[in-house]
Length: 363
Ligand SMILES: [Zn+2]
Image (tube, rainbow, N blue to C red):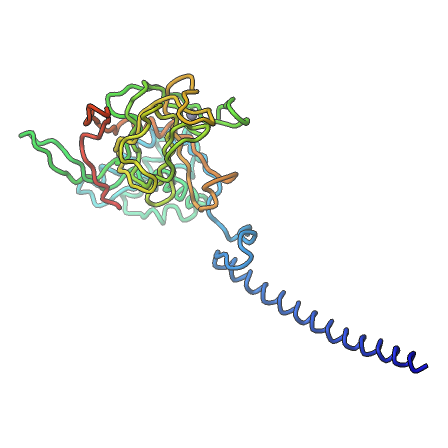
């Protein structure tokens, strides 16, 4: 009997205790949910990951560009570049910005420059000459900002202020300040090459994948030139690319990939990961390495430089499924007008260097 009432009392007190604990747990959970809600909403607002790390990144407020189809013809690039450069080098009050001109044109042709219309460009120039601002002209164009950001990421380092060593009449050299095209063709001046638009073609080695660059066929040993100034991000062997160099532009938005460099002597001397190169510098030599896990193997059939260009709007796009590689065929065509002259400066190592020194004035 006594035992039973004790037992009964025990159950009641246990029940009361559980009720209390239960209430505490509920209260605790409510606090956690409410506080995490505020933390998450705050992190979404600022685009800053401060809680639970990566998963939160998936939200609509992350508005960096996810995809770019680069379809500007070299002809229109050359036309707009000339307008930009001439307006800066003349005393004209109105200066054109080729990226702005191209972005406006893209709004009118859907980004496909095979549909380029000269009248559209002429009318735009006329409006600018009449004193209208680009901001006014484009304020109702829904995709202007998208094209402007895309083309700035692609072509942002191509035109600007630089200083280049030039030969004087008396045989000496001096630096001259200039405004113009400051990106170089990746093949040194006076070296021949051929190419066609092979972007997106399928590739047989390894897993099934498409070709994310442009192959420039040339002779083994042809000096390879840095298209733009930047920092060496990758240097060394890669199963697909063989001996390769990856260079990131100073603004971080462009990653230049130069692959299949020469067996035994792929790189210019002094290249190291983390060091800087200048646009027009010799960075290596054309070859046929790659398609091998083993280093320093020639497994490519036709000697060529694989040249690739990746756009990076957010660091999550550096590696993996979110990479944006653009078709550089037209960029190569455009860059044919600016090539770096080189000479052999070391007969023992047979290394080449640029002839005319260069300073990028925008960095
Ligand atoms: Zn290739």
